[in-house]
Length: 142
Image 1 (cartoon, one colour):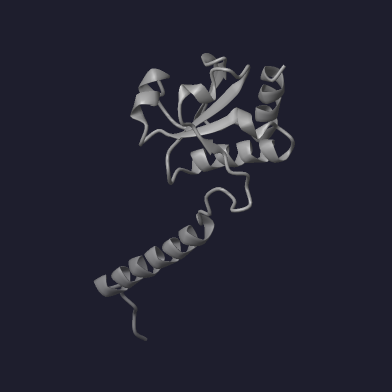
Image 2: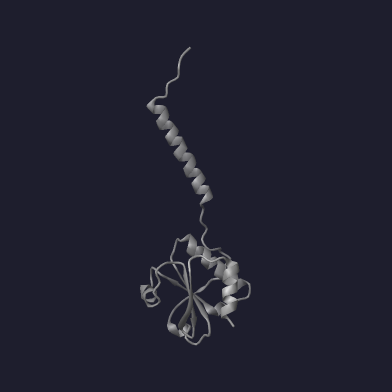
């Protein structure tokens, strides 16, 4: 009876197969669709004139290709779809508008700045569940 010995080639083939399997599993579990195509579009922030006459305003600082930013943008779109005033929500690409990031001292994204007549009243750092975001919106819109 012959004995079977593991050779270097067998080890190499096993590693290649294992890598391929992990790659396939990783790609199917980690597909990114970004914000939903049917989501309400949040307006781009243009100037302080957009917000200085509003009693409350939400500005989302985000970056492209970020799951966390996509999640917050989706939650804000859902909030608008559920009846929140769309004119109160803006977004700023933090990679492109570094002046506003410096002005509001943005150290990470996603970050939502809540303004009252153009003055910062509160900020939300990181990803917040929709339910909590709705509570924050209802508290500030009064």
